[in-house]
Length: 487
Ligand SMILES: [Zn+2]
Image 1 (tube, rainbow, N blue to C red):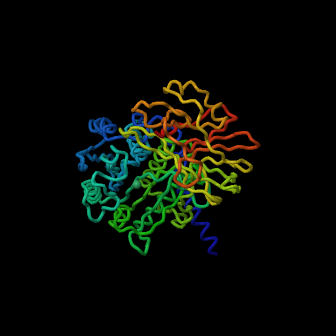
Image 2: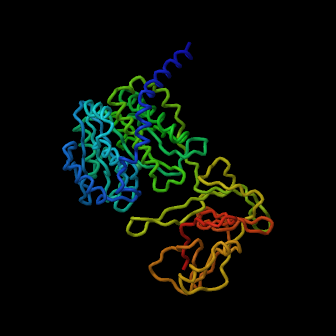
């Protein structure tokens, strides 16, 4: 009996989702028409979005207000559209290095400004008023860092309200008394959907509003919207959705905004294979958030069964950028079998507009419960130390003229230079550069070191790992964005 009831309930869920299926497909397929092309990489600043906001301010369709100012004196803008009684409030980038949804918001604004999707837009704008507060932490964005200039995490300031950014968020929420809130973040790319090798491309949470994790109508509605969006994402990123732990955090905004009566949906943009600048994830944000806005306008989410929420796999953090499995490692006369997990870690250039990589071994041993964006089965291969090229070179252009594939095949991972131009902080080559007196340490695999070694089988070097990037030496292309400089 219970089984029959459940299947009827899930049918209701399916029909609510089915109604919007068409529009979702169309939104995804026509995305390029609305993509705001001026902000195409993660390191965006307030000055990058200012011209977009200025343009919206001259457009009758939108209301643009300065809702507050950051500690560093940068404006916090609120952009509103629609005439409906239901208020939907979206805010992004309260953590400065989490820009994916900020970009998606400007795509959504372009969509609202266009002449297309007339029927759907009329339904949205008659029933809803939609408010956007993109880049809540512009000072953090300037430095591409999580925290604001006070050095605090705005998401732990919902009670004390010391930061003007927090005060602005609270004031806007209260003045709108929004029915729905979208709390838009990025998460580490190393999250995966529990017990799978799938990255958590998007993770959701309907935050708890008390320690008991009760579900009232406010939180229940957030869960329904999440079930709706999860169903959309399964089509474009199957298995790549995670659900955050819902332990109550009394200082966080999501938890408090839920408590204050706004159905709050936390969206975290994670990783997607070969999407370094997260532009595919941005598109998934655009498609799923716009579809959610449409379902809120039509109230079609109401029949969704919240039990489906608990079925979304939990978020786990078991991904590496590169995982090497089952290699032989010789130490003090014995041979051991070892897995290696390593991450390609970004380091910003001083202007925070771009970055380079300084990779690290994160873990080693039996890593059979972990996964990699890239995985190499190294069974039968032996890890060998990278050597220093015997000839000392004088200039970068001398290095440039080397045949790196040949060099790596011979086991050379380091080039000695007699002197360095001061401006270089990393090696633009797929090898490391070392100073005249630098002595490379003996290879001693350990979490924390830069992953640089070769994999050899029957006396032949077949793979190189340079700065945590795998090179298959049977192929001619070498995809190592940069090496290190050790002076
Ligand atoms: Zn965040």
